[in-house]
Amino acid sequence: MKALLIVALLAAVPAVAAEDPLRVRAEAILKQQPVIDGHNDWPMALRMGFGEDWWKTDLTADSRTFKRPLHTDIPRLRAGHVGGQFWSVYVPASVTGPAAVKATLEQIDIVHGMAARYPQYFELARTAADVRRIQKAGRIASLLGVEGGSQIDNSLAVLRMYHDLGVGYMTLTHTKHNDWADSANEAPRAQPLTDFGKAVIGEMNRIGMLVDLSHVSPETMRAVLAVTKAPVIFSHSSARGIADHPRNVPDDVLRQVAANGGVVMVNYVPQFIDNARIAHAAARSGEFTRLNLLYLGQPARAAEAMAAWDKANPAPVVPLSVVADHIDHIVKIAGIDHVGIGADYDGIDALPIGLEGVETYPALFAELLRRGWKDDQLMKLSGGNILRAMAQAETVATGLKNDVPSAIRP
Image (tube, rainbow, N blue to C red; front, side):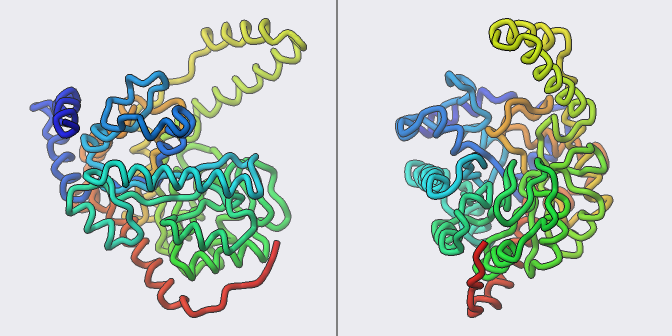
């Protein structure tokens, strides 16, 4: 029955236009090397939208029809040629201590539950070899990424237990500093990576967990690259040379990533990747503050005025081509071996035109073909580069496995 539903829903996805040979070619490339995306918040969206009732939710249904529409569902993952996904297990940076550990485990439980409920579509993966085997079998290799170092509650033991549960990377910070690393969203501190932070990096290298530098400050990026023994990733970041946002990677760091063997997986968030959208977001934030001061104690009046401002000042449209610009820039600075895709689906409210859901990866690849990309280059972007970085990190871990973990505390 579910198989029939998948066929029906895939039939509803717009057919590849016969007159668009580049789209046809993109589809063929992605059949050879499916997309391995670095960051998707579907587990969080399911938890927030359904709570424990997510277990009753049909993930083979078109999630665009849900009361809270989503970017992800099984038919669209298949249509987008997704063969590997790092599912983000996200907890807000404002949640700390044991509560953060509990919330992380709840997110991990969802990913395990997805694989248990739909074994014909998902299989948990830990290694590059796992991913290749699962892709070859036609399923989606499901990996996990913890999105914030505060989620380990300053415990290397918790870090190790996450890895035992299948976590493949950890983002060192989210939108706030933690006790040992700086976020890009707050003013820099004198020490962007403490001695305990260096111990965290060392332990991640030892156990084979990828270090994710998305969300961290540029100073923390540089500090980590100076001490890590394994390739790093940016699971969902873009190029600061294209859009001047602190979430993006500066050119000097891109060069260091190339020397390190790492991968920058390009993000889709409009207010991170487009300068006009960045300026609009800043203006809107300023107007929000102004109106709430002007109409102090009058939230309804402030909201009405904000709605009027939004109507008069629509956000600039960000096309798919802007994402391709970031990809091209990273290749120009770091090289073709150091770029990937980390869209951030179901963790964001807006998306570039043409990239509205997980079914749209072929459209981005067709755009790159228009720009002169070769098939082998696109296969590196779609998954080859992250698989290579994973394998290198696994080799480093094998060499370090007998090292004694650091006893440093924050």
